[in-house]
View 1 (tube, rainbow, N blue to C red):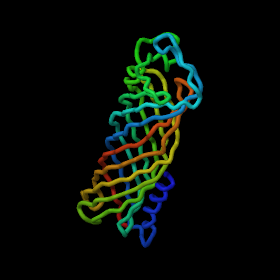
View 2: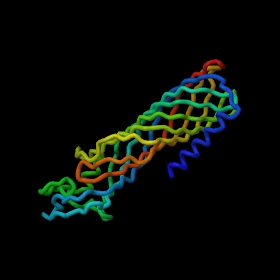
View 3: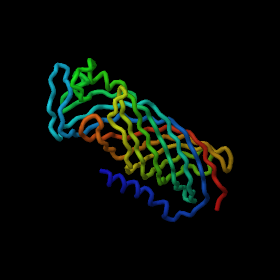
View 4: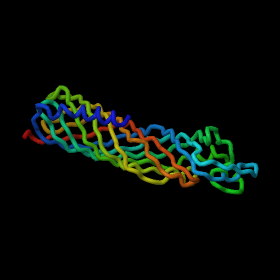
Length: 259
């Protein structure tokens, strides 16, 4: 699936090099709102024995047992800086450094072996031999933690109505993102790690010309990476976390004089 996405993005870049001549450099920056999509976390456990299920009993969990839950994120922030080159064909290309962040809002729907375990005593997943008197669902509902992405992209754009006061544009990009995730519901450490992943984005926006050199712009970006995978710190197992964002940003761009 990802190979097809990479190929499609590379094909989108191809027209830049065809019969295009450099027309001038530009630099720009933006700030925006990062709407981090919910993550349907999923993974497999190692072999372990649960803590107190709430009635004094425990459960032996087999290696490879599926588990997971859903994580919702609060709206966060995004920042980006880009430097690039414009072409006389209407295309432009750029190198972008971007950072996004979002705090965890809540976790819900904890499952183990295909069954919902939200009603069990939280001691069952905390490994405590003594019942804690609070359910798994209540503990994970307190969604402390965050996800941050620090990425670099190679982007390609096409500017419509070039030279007009308003220039709509479309763009795509591929790159690399360092994804850092902390899940700490009710201050209990579950996930804390970072992993580098292939990243890709698609963008649509419009630039308003303030002068021959300065312009302001507004844009929407869909950005994603491959799922990141971390070791669970609460009990043996790995967990895959989805990482997708919808970003709404405003910024300014300076166009240097033509080459």
